[in-house]
Every structure is written in structure tokens, then in C-alpha cells.
Image (cartoon, rainbow, N blue to C red; front, side):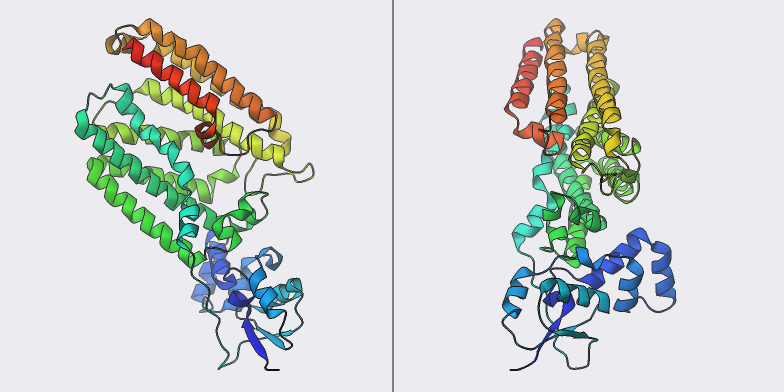
Length: 404
């Protein structure tokens, strides 16, 4: 029977080990990456693979290819990204064959292109609901900016959706090893191998450029400037800040506040310091809930959350941090309701006091659900699917409408 030659990178694995090795070097070992480039070895797949420190056991196998090749009597695996990747793939696949370096004339397997749905999944459109915060300043200003201001704010919200997708893609590219070890994140397109590193980088670049153009068209240089600060902060978070406990939660809360500032800039309304303070404490609470849920799912002997600075032993601290910040946000809301700003905006400001117990109930119920293990997703996404959260939002909205 004819000898079947398969390239390890795209024949037995659902990813390109060479591309992932270079990505890992740039993200985690930039000094080593620079040294390889200066030595002229950056194009050497084997050298990059060895220096990257990637565990070959974590790379996803292409089960369909393995099933197809299992019927072949004679199989040779070409080690295009270093022997250890090919040998690991061959051993884990259970196929009978040998591995050797590439030779001139060997066929080169071509990686299948990702389906459009894989790009959409990697961009996480279900997370775009967070960017409705961009429209909140317009709502609280009672649409004083007019329809033009509303449309500009809507454009800014769309720009933030694309910028967020760009950041999610970059985050997933940087987090490949941690995501593959995570109980749920291993199903993400990049971690699973449905989307290649090159395709992920291309999608991130396209999303970022479109976001920038949309921000400039919607709110001009000021809105684009806030978007740039948001994107740079998000990248700093993905590359470094998220690895540090407390700073991780603070950064997430600040990123939410930047959305509010962008909406105010785009619509041309004043950015309320009261709103910023309330949201800062509220989203600090939700960030703590997100990490609490992840830490709770971490095995008892697992120590840290993969890719984060939090440990399972921090559950008590996260709970106290989250509950206290959530209740402080209600306290700031109550103080705001006594201010001259409220009396100038609402004809019946006393009706707004109904919002305080409603939000207080929602925050503490959210934390009770989290503590009991019912928070299986990001708290903001959880709220978008939760009937009780929708009812609370409707009640608070009705109080605001009656107060006006």
C-alpha cells in the first residue's frame, strides 16, 4: 500500500503549532522572541517550538483526520514544527507510523478554512449587550441631545462592540494554553482549533479598524480617543493586569465606566460623576462575582484560576469585596437622589427612591445565586438572560418614567 505522508501541523492537529509557538513567544517570552529574530532563527519552526514552552499534550487533535487515517496501513508524519509536536500528536492519536523531518517534495497539507460561524462565535456577539451602557448617558439626560445625538451614541455603541470583539480575539490568542485547561473556555473557536492563529489575528485587525472608523464617524476625535483608551486598557488587561488579583476586578470596572464616557462624548451630553461612581462600585461587584464563580469551579487542589491571580482560597475575600461594593453603589445612588441634579431633572424625584430597594434586592440576589453555584456565565450576560433582572430593570425604568 502507498506510504501516506501527513504533516503534523495540519494533518493530525486542529491548529498550527508553528504559529502558536510564535504567538506564545511574543506574548510570554518577548526577550526570547527578539533573540531568535536577531539570530536569524525566527523562521525556524523547530527552534520557535522548543523556545515557546508550549506543552504539546495540550494541542487539540483533529479527531476526523485521525479516524480517516486509521485505515491507512503505512503512515509517515512530517515534523514541520519540531519533533516533539509531531511525536506527541502521533502518540495521542494511537496511529501506527513513524515521524521524520520534512523533505523536499513532501506534500504540504493545507489547513481547512474556518466557517463564518466560527468567526462570529470568536467575536462573542452575546457579550455586546454590555455596550448598551454607551446609551445610558443619553437616557439619563432625557434625550436632550436630540435624534442626531442618539444616532451618534448608537454609532459609538456599535464601535465599542467591534472594539470589544477585537479585544476578545486578542485575549483568546494570548490565553490559548489557559483556555484549553479551562472547563468551559476550551470550547472557544481558537482554543478548540476551529479558528487558526492567522485567522484570529486577521479578524482582530479587521474589527479594530472598523471600530476606529465608526467611532470617528459617530463622535469625532473625542469619541475615538475614548475608544482608543478603552482598547489600550483592554489590551493591557489581557496581557498583564488580569494576572493580578484585585487589579483585575478594578480594571474591569473601569472599562465599563469608559463606555459611559464614550456615550456622553458622542451624544454631546455631560458625563455625570454620580453615574460614574455608581457604575464603578456596581461593576466592581459584578467583576468580583465573575471571579468568585470561576474560583468556586476550580478544583480544591487546583490553586489558582487558570490565567488569573485569584485562588480558590480567595472566595471569602471576593464575596466580601463584591457584596460591599454592590451595596455601596446603592448608597451612592441614594445620596444622588437627594442632590440638586435630580431635582433639576425630575418633576417628582421622590418616586425614584423606589429604585433603591429594587437595586439592593437585585444585587444581593445575584450574589446569593453566585454563592450557591448558579452563576455559570459572566454576570452581565447572566442578567441579560435572567427574568428577575429584566423585571428589576423594568421596575426601575418605570420609576424613572413616572418621576419625570
